[in-house]
Structure formats: C-alpha cells, structure tokens
View 1 (cartoon, protein in one colour):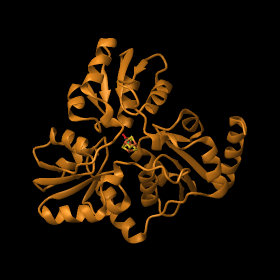
View 2 (cartoon, rainbow, N blue to C red):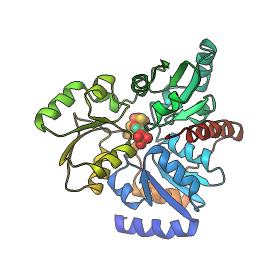
View 3 (cartoon, rainbow, N blue to C red):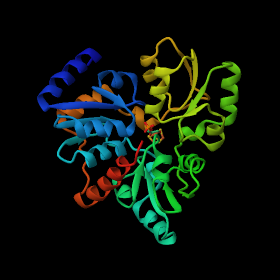
Length: 304
Ligand code: 13P
Ligand code: SF4
C-alpha cells in the first residue's frame, strides 16, 4: 500500500474510533508527519490525559504509553509496535528498587519517567529530563536514590547539595556520544553551540552550552539566533528541529545515534493499531494509583 493510501485509511479510522495519534520527537519522519501532536515523553502523556479522544495511539516506547495509561485510565492506549521498549527503563525492576529502599531507609526515591509503572509505584516522586533537579531540590530528605539513569543522576548532583545515590542504568544511544565526538563536531563547525540531552555521559554534558530534554531543545531552537547547532541526542530529533527552523543547520556529533526501539513504529503499524485496536497498554489499578501519585507529586513541584 502506498503512503497516501495508508494516510487516508488512518484518517478515516481515527475519526471512527475517536482516536488521537501522538508521536515522540524521535519517531521516524513519516510517523511524525501523521501525528496530531509531537512532543517529549511527558508532554505527550499530559496531552493524552487532557484530550477528548477515546483512543490514544502512542508512537513511542512502552513506558511512554504506560504513562499515558496512568494519567488517562478511562482511555484506550495503543502502542503500535508491541516490542518497542526502552533498554534504560528495563535496567531497574521494582524488586531491586525495594532492596535499595531497605538499604537506604532515610533516602527519598526519585524515579525518571523512563521507567515502568511498577517502578514508578515504588517511588516517592517522578522526574523528567526537564525538571529532575527542581524535583530533587523540592524534597526534605538529605539523601536521594535516583533511578534508573546514572547520567541524569550525575547532572542532578551538579545542581543540588543533596547526596545522590545513583542507580547504574544508562541509555545505550546517548552513551555513545563521547567527548571526542563533541571536539570533532566543534572543530568542523566552529561557533556552533552544542546542546545535549542530560542522558549523555557527564564528560559530554560538561562540554555543552545547554543541557536540555527534547522539549527544551525545541524551545531553545525556536528562540536561538544561531545559524548552526550541534545536537547531542537521538538522530530523529533533527527532523523535528528542522521543522521548527528550516534555515538552521543541525549536526549530530558522532555516528549511530539511533534508538532502534523508537524506529520500530511505521505508518503501516499505526494503521494496524487502529484497525485491530492493538497493542493495548494497561496498568493494574493498585500499581496505577501509586504511580499516578508519584506523577501528581512531580506536577505539584514549582517550575517542574
Ligand atoms: P525526553 O523526555 O527529553 O523526550 O526524552 C525521552 C527519551 O527517551 C530520551 O532518550
Ligand atoms: Fe530509552 Fe535511550 Fe531510546 Fe530514550 S533514546 S527510549 S532513553 S533507549
């Protein structure tokens, strides 16, 4: 089936099912193009919760669809590709986190949005790439377990005087960017500011002009006077940024900055999701309640 035909069928089914299509900023161009909204992981879950739609087709990875299901329990949330997961989110399991809680009973537990609902349910509060430091600084505890991203935990530790006990997880894609990649990119494009995601290694974060989640990168690009920018994050972001400012030249440092899980979703799979109402993502009520509470606490943090 050609793309135009797929798009036509999707549009008709969307209407019939009262569905909305959400796509993360790392999705392939064709999927971004057919989405009603593109955004970062948490923005999209909020849109899902506030939308009038009855069905949410979440083009992203499993934890994102789960966050939408936590915030919008009355809606049907579909993940077009069942196996699209986040390897970093899989680096922490609820049982392991419970062991850490026993080991550090005085520590508060902050869990990055890139985690399963069961892990969120074990936390005191959630955090995103945009608000992690504000969330940690809002807590009374002197020590904080931060899971699962050790790089984001390190970034937070530079913006707080609390002791951060970092879970050893990391993003296999962002971890690929090395200081040498940044140096090479700077040499090739002198004067271009470097913006990186806080999931990058501390040595890379140290070299950046700005450290931003994908939503923050879009806002930065909207406002910048730069004509060239080096962007240290997953390569799909470049398509999203070019749409904002087509006249700016964007460069990715290094090679292979692709999150394979983000690329599993295709227009064909979006169509199948709507035709077969698959793959439904649900969260058990007892987990959902506790995970929702951790997300609500995050939303109550000023500037978070
Ligand atoms: P954002 O929340 O910044 O969109 O990041 C999601 C993600 O998976 C980064 O790798
Ligand atoms: Fe997970 Fe990294 Fe992929 Fe984001 S880019 S979904 S953190 S593996």
